[in-house]
Image (tube, rainbow over all chains, first blue to last red; front, side, top):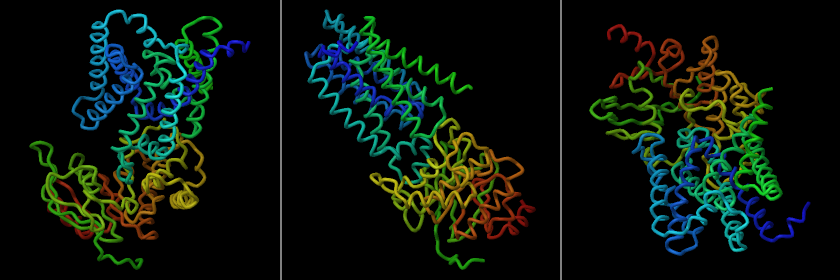
Length: 265
Length: 239
């Protein structure tokens, strides 16, 4: 059954999937606990505008997506911190705004429709060796920064006001977290596609939260759910010729339902 | 009484005013809190007592005036380890948050430098803080599974874990079972006397705190500072 691993494009797909599957819960746990789940979806849509820029300007869409997503994340954080807009309306503004920009840019350069499909729903078999290097390096950066600021990020997620009084530079770390979220989202585009990125970031964490454990254990369970979903989702999708991103997210959803039932007992 | 030098100023407020738009919440408030003091800030709901506390802690900026903690202007304050804070639980805490009592109390040590890793001294401080509030047995329990009073003890332990010199508490008995509120005030009094902690407590529950506090600041736009609770009682009849 392992003959599929003799295809290098499939091996690269697994490499990308596992790397992204590893960093998604690292960021996801902080986003979910801070009730920022919708930010992942908003930034994913911003990344589509970035991809449209790349396709139109004939640049590598991966890098333009990364740039636009990071810039959007900074704009979002600024709006949130200054409380200029009412609650989640900032998210609606960015989500629909970037989608509008993306559609206009895409319609300017006609004929990108087949490509567009790959970005929306993922295209793990089109990942190149260079992509893998970039994904790996950026993922290491994300993981190391989360590790360094781990205890401060927990304290902020638990109680932002207390964190401030205890001397943690809350503003700085909020900015760091949202930039890391933007990077993670950009890396996840080829794996699950723009429309399903937030599912990969949020669902494994939600599943782990059902088990009501310590913070560290919750993170470890979320990692397990994420990596298991990516691995089994990719295998199932290759053998049954199904959309990879969709299958990965369905496996994660299935695990979420299992943990919910398990936690009830 | 313990041998504490009560003459040292820990907190100094000078001409503090605060307005929401046209509405003035605090007007020209000045007073000092000395080392080892136990000050109760009391007032009706909406009287501005929590606002006053947040201004002292630097969480809100006053419209006018200055606050100094340990002689340092709050706007440039750097010695966060010297202050402990127990926020109003109802507004700041999600009971489904995945954390054990130990993880929560450890958060009281997290403000001591960005690149520090947790060491034995941190763990010893957590143990001592849990012992001070009688919660050692609950170390590995989920914070959300505890009763309101137990959770509040854990939050006091979190504040104590930083080994502060002054402890700020915002309505500590809200969400605490009625029967054990007295016990709770006794605990705070004990921290004030035995650990020689300066205590600043915000409450609407004047009756319970009147016997415990040394000084009472009654907030009603401006602040009436009473050197002793008795003095407050006498003046209250004249209000």
